[in-house]
Length: 279
Image (cartoon, rainbow, N blue to C red):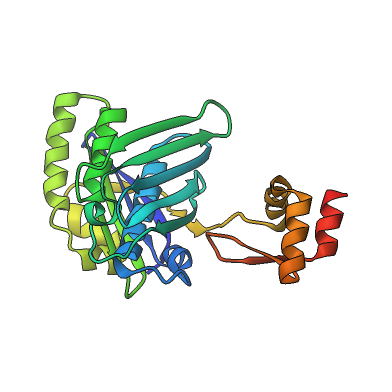
């Protein structure tokens, strides 16, 4: 099967649209080397899938950030992406993790969705985390922000480093018919098993679920990990610290090391580098 693809589909006679995403390499790149506890890695997998699905529902060019933040063991978890499905993400812990689930990991908190179009005004939506299920929290966001009935199915397997998800959403046409169509497709989709969603190829999944409803699947869109860090961006951050503070740090340690929080890439700077930057 081909991994790291987002599939959009519609139905010939039903007023509902759908999405299916299956990820392996992208998910692996995000959690690799961070040594997250398993429940945190699972949450990041679900958040990654959810961000891919959410981005695909929006008609915009630009960046998106989906962040969970609260007073629990995980201070925040965030996935950043764009309309090209370039993704990166990170979680920050502030105490020991003992069990999984949104409530246990994030505690009392919010989901913050920030959309920054290339052209146009920035938009931010905030919803409270009222469920232990990330999917249910996102479904509430769709009802609050777009008034469109939406269902999500999210699954992660940390051992195989796979993450996948499905989305169904009514089309804003004939409301009564769309609701009936949605109930029908929702019942079919509820039969999906985690192992099927994670391990079967997309065409097999869609055929098993909707073989009588003729889904029309569009050309899939690749999903990739893209950190976006660079030496130039690191230099811009250093400038804000100030020359004297940086040189003082180098006097103590011999050189200055800066690590990207997302990909853990290390950037080294010598005394000569710092002098040249400020010159």
